[in-house]
Image (cartoon, chains in turn purple, green):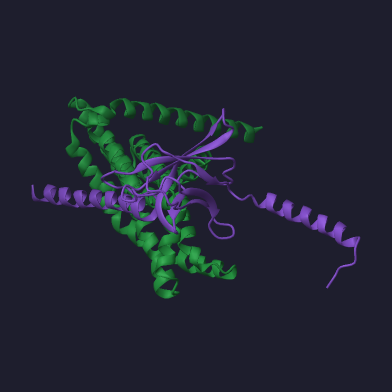
Length: 164
Length: 255
């Protein structure tokens, strides 16, 4: 009897330790927070081009993370990407004329949505849409724009002598 | 000609074993609901397969983590990004190293114990005695051991990964002085829930494979001292190869 009790105790300890390890991996190592009470709300935004934005990417305001990108889908009628963001419940006073832009963290980092506040007295609520958006900057477009403008400049500067 | 015939014979042998094992697995799956009726037996086997493997798993995990800390730091230093040591180590451990090394250790520690125990029961006619007493050895002996192994493996995988991440942290942060905040925050922002899930699924798959091989080899051991020894050896060899092959298959499916 005593022996079987010792077995029970150490089995219980082992199972608890295993579950604790898995919970540790899920909450501390991975980037998914598990909150017990969920008072977050969702807002949508339509982008022409989301670049490399992924589901689960952070949504931040002044650099502070306030939520996550929940879903990204393509709207066949608008031909736009519709991004649904889930914002934490205690950031509930975001002006409804705020604008959402897609930025890149670092030179080659992942992309995230930055929200800069507007001046309205009305706030965003669950299901609202962010009207002012700025698309992701696609590096290739930027480079080609730069190259074309350079080419334009050269052909212009060849004709008249450059003035100092 | 002789060689060819031998080759064919061994191929046939292999196929026969694979078929028998599949049938054995099917029988175990069909019996599995019956295991719930006597949870006491499963608890005992979780103790044997899991709790008794804890020391070897944790020690190995710590050292695997510490080696990853040393090697990872050396590698990342050459390209000047020591800060991403946490990310690289956590992903490697979660997705590959953790489940695979745990399964190999599990096959060596728990698989051999299972195979030799059941093989000895077979050799000393305990299994036949049970049958005579109208006790189904599949239910009474094999099923609890199989389920105990299946339950233990994902838990052991989780513990292994957790301990080895602490090992990496020990070397990276305490020894080499990588910034603690950078280490954890970079790791946290790069590791997705899917990566954790992948590791645990692998742990479960390897657990099923290693436990199945161990109980199958023990159950079908020859009733001699040699036979038991051979069953034990086969358990380790087949489990290790199966783990590595399954690892490729599971990765290809999940990725």
